[in-house]
Image (cartoon, rainbow, N blue to C red; front, side, top):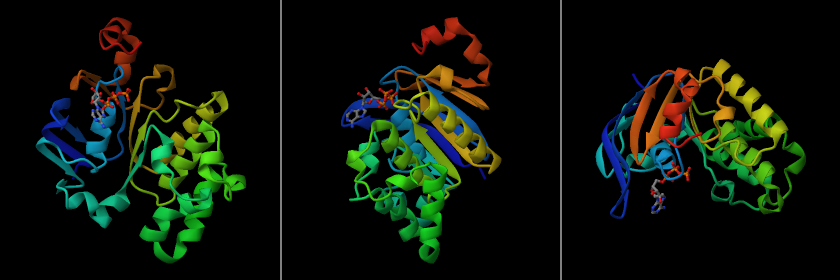
Amino acid sequence: MDIAQLEHVSYSYRNDPAIVDINLNIKRGEVIYLVGENGAGKSTLLLILAALFVPTRGIAKIFGKVITEKVTKDVCLRRKIGIVFQDPDIQLFSPTVYDDVSFAPRHLTGEDYKKYTEKAMRIMKISHLKQRHPYELSEGEKKRVAIATVLSYDPEFMLFDEPTANMDGKGRREFKLLLKKLIDEEKTIVIATHLLRDIVYATRIIGMYEGKIEYDGDPSILKNKKYLEKLNVI
Ligand SMILES: Nc1ncnc2c1ncn2[C@@H]1O[C@H](COP(=O)(O)OP(=O)(O)OP(=O)(O)O)[C@@H](O)[C@H]1O
């Protein structure tokens, strides 16, 4: 079974189309980067893949389930999918870092939630911040916490929206190591980015332009500067 199958999927915010007629299959173990200029539709496509948005048109099947309003709340499905939003302020809502990181495992993994929480904080090197209020953190620290809130329940399908956008060189190197670890654990990964220099371990690139898929293929496209210029991603 594919992780995701999109058939003629479109999504509009009120009447403004954000993605248009997307056909896409994602197989287990793929490491896909979505590239495209601002407003190309990358975040919207991630939200569809995360089973958080229901397509305005077409059919999205995630882990074999057709996504409807009801299915977006299915706990079994939610347990398998993790999304790290571009803006960590959307993801962090608790009074302390610990409460934020433990929120999902508390609801999804039961008894062992402390173990999962500690492990995620250790991996993201945020254990020392656990009693801090998320809003007191730097943007880079917030991003680490946001990633930890997803690692903490160990989903098999992981989606990242501009994960390295507010990170310094050290943060970006550490994210690369995290990615390697997730790939070794055979996760399926989709990353939206406009930072081409940060693309590593890609098995597939999807280039978006004005809500449509303009390229879907192997990473050799990254060497084709002329084509990337056409997509406005250079
Ligand atoms: N909440 C919203 N309400 C209305 N329109 C929206 C909303 N979110 C996105 N859009 C619009 O949908 C289109 C696609 O936006 P989206 O955020 O998916 O693109 P993106 O490629 O992720 O861009 P960026 O790199 O700037 O995040 C844009 O025209 C955008 O203005």
